Length: 445
Image (cartoon, rainbow, N blue to C red; front, side, top):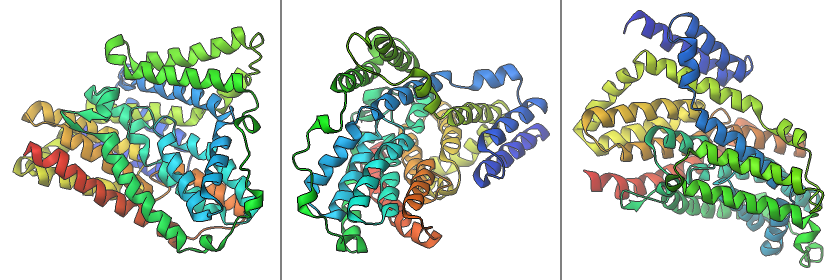
């Protein structure tokens, strides 16, 4: 490697380590890494700006804003109450259902937002019936981090895959004449959730009983949804935005533009018709303040950092290392990529890793005439599922663990945390790998 390549790689690795250990703020560490790369010649300041995929940033900000309004409608609380009624006093079933629900919600809403939306629901039930909240909230965090890659909207990796490969919304359901992310991850998810239901049944959680007289079986949506007009407008706006994003290929505009237009239309509706329709929407300034701007700043820096690697051709070196495995056998190449990626993203922020390797796979497909899709799916699926191993790999787990420990006023040991995360990760990885090989590897060999 040339000196500039070694320097760039060193800066990148040091930056990622600082992001993981959090000796300084993660956003500060990432931004400093970009500045140092520019100062040392890995890229110019103009190149650093252009390396950022502003289309993805627009998607994140817009969807987070719409999701923020959705969280104010009262619908999450109503869904939690409905789940409680369906469980009929069975705490393991209640926790399993609310966790399972969080996974499907996360297909459209950021996983951290899902945890924040559903945590108050669990806390409310926990205070009534006195079961430990941390395990339930952690299960929600694991589930919400699972299904975010099933569709294009929920998490950053599928949006980065769209940016790199050009895959559209419907491609996450059916691609290249075969089932893709949504179907394969849903099947895997159902197996994992079923396992945890039996795990909860064998835990102290099963000894907790709910008084049937206290179940709010007569609860109506209006008991939680204080303003049905506001909730209707938000849901319609959210649904129309999702439909428009699904039809992006026919509309001929960027996904970021569609998401931004959806969020702007919703805001304008509140501004123009808020009083006339008695919507009583939350203040826009407050909604914007609730957005995770630190996360946005981190993602901006992340794109620039990976751009520095690409600009100095380091990604080509990584590609050259992978080529022999893939040329020897597609099954071998996919397996190496899958099982090496999973533990790495368990301790490394997985967005940076996935974005880096997506570019590597793209370049491999262009230079070696290989179909990149088995590799794309292997990377995205293992990169998402493996990130559930520790709080370093998934911010949603950090948020969930913090909320649960604060509610219970007690700390979980690492061993206890791993008793949840390790089986969750292992089962999901094994089931997904088998489905991936059968559907996406063997037919291409």
